[in-house]
Image 1 (tube, rainbow, N blue to C red):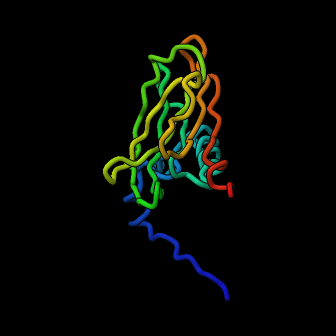
Image 2 (image 1 turned 180 degrees about the vertical axis):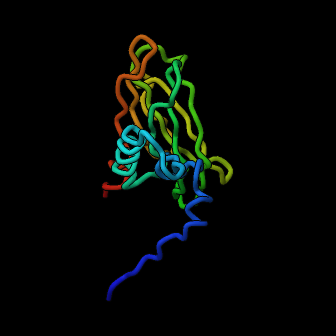
Length: 152
C-alpha cells in the first residue's frame, strides 16, 4: 500500500508566506527570496530538530537569556493538555543550569523553570530541557524530552 500526500496549490502556498510553523518554528518565505542561503540553512536545522517538535526548547532571539517553548500536546497524569507555546525569560538565572518542565494544573499545561540546584519538582511533570547560562548568555540547551518518551 502506498501513501500519497497531496501537494499544496500555488494559492495555498501563498497563504503560508510569513507564517511561522508552530511545530518547527520555521517562517515560510516569499517567492523568489534572495539571498536564500541563510533562510535555507535555518530551515533545514529547524526541520531536522522537528522530529518531535512538541514542547521543544530553543534559545529565543534577543539579548536577554530567554528560551522559546514550542506548542504541543501531552498526557500528564492521564489528563491531555495543550500548550500554545511561549517565551520564558531566564534573566533571573544569570549563571547556572536551569531545568524546564511541563506540568498539568486544572486541566491546563503549565511550563515552569527552576535552578538545577533545587532539583526537578516533586509532583508529576515532564522534563523538557536543561539550559546552561553563563554571564547572562545561553551556552547550551539539553533536550530531556526523549528521555521521557523512551522510558519504561
